[in-house]
Amino acid sequence: MLFGVAAAGAAFGPLIGGWVTTYLSWRVAFGAEALIVLGVLLASGLITDAPAVVPRPRLDVVGVVLSVAGLGLFVFGILQTSTRGWNDPVVLLLIGAGVVVTGVFIWWVVRREASGEPALVHPSIFRHRTTSAGLPILSTQTFAQAGLLFLIPLFTQSVLGFDALQTGITLLPLSFGVLLTSTLTPSLGRKIYPKYIIQVGLVLLFVGGFILARSIETATEASDMALGLLIGGLAIGIIAGQLPNLILSGVEPDEASEASGLQGTAQNLGMALGTAVIGTVILSVSFSSMGSRVSESPTIPQDAKVQITSALESGLNEANRQEIDDAIAASAPEVQNEIDTAYHAAVLDGFQGAIIIGGIVALFGALLAFRLPKQKLPGDAGVEEVIRQTVRSPTIPAMQLEMDDLPRKTRL
Image 1 (tube, rainbow, N blue to C red):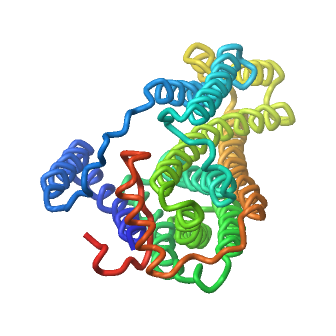
Image 2: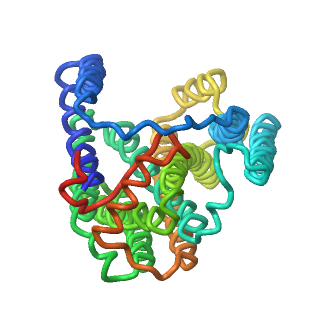
């Protein structure tokens, strides 16, 4: 139910935000969000908090610093590939440093848990297959999901020329798909093994991406992309209706809050990597396709081919971009048309390649799901116990709950 409410916000948020941005101003949209947050903060006093934990838990400060530094360096290195490329020394240094620092973090928390000291993460929680397999699957789902949420607005506005409102309308099938299945399918996990439902959702996510990649080649209106986005949304809702609950139900009650916190980390990591990698794929595939099309063209002069391909290989910057623009402007009309055709075809190749990469990651998640245990979700009584232990456990102060069909007395 909680995820369904969040999905409803996702369904109408882009549409309302797009209308405000198009007909008023983006400043009004951000200002309205600030007012909403203020209202939530004021209303938070109406929520009855859990009793204070005695003694108060100590925070593993070193673990916090190591985890932030390790994951931050790794993701920042991935982000730099869009401008520097994968072979750049700075990129390799950042990614390598992130891996090393993350390794130090793992050593640190293992050592802390073995000595009985407070640890940011207790490695023993990964003895549960719902955690050790479920968290990577969650990251693959959010990776593919982030790719869609990043790709479609970029494509509709930069290629099709849509405004913010039209982009919000384009995303509605995705959002409604998430809303529909995230509210209607969670109870299936009590009758069917959730691992199979999750695998179906991940395969559907690939299918939706494949259909979407084919449709953008000739897309001119929002309806041209609706089928692929709807299937992708249905798939995301199916996964989200099962996987978070399966992860929480597979751990001990006193580990539930830590599992919930790890879910948030896996989701955020998948989102960050998805956005970074998908953006890099768009650029790299577009540049490669553009270079091939220009080199194979019988219309474009040889000197122009050399200039364009060398600029693409070195990475476009303001200086060589201006040189290319000047060279194209001085070319014959048929040469300009040929270059323009090659450019638009290369951009489509980039977007299609990025969508397919997201789908392949989803298929990889479906393979990982074979490691999930064959266990059904608990009934209302089991869910209530998990919620009680989660909100009162001192392991992780902040938590994220995505549960369905809670008994009425547990709802706030």
